[in-house]
Image (cartoon, rainbow, N blue to C red):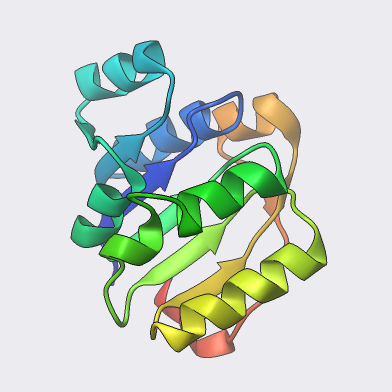
Length: 148
């Protein structure tokens, strides 16, 4: 079972989702450009990471909750991105709402690096994230879904 999770994107949805992961007992490392959100989560028991690369180096699964395709691509392919630190056998779960073409391209690139991916956009808004009852529509390999 996966216990070490990295989470990138601590906005309106990501912050409450990370709080629920901490409450559930997961070891959580977080990254965002918002220092205030990082400090809040660190105070609740999460570890801060300076980059997506650092998240990917230490996590069994990396979850993204980012606003648009451009941010997702930067976090994956950019300098100090997930691909620079990703380990074979780890899983990337993208909960961002991005285009299907971007998700497919990302899955193909990750697969070439032996990193599994689940495309998992959410529905339920901030309240659903706070309450821990989001609807998650997951696409990917069934065996990867079962691991997560």
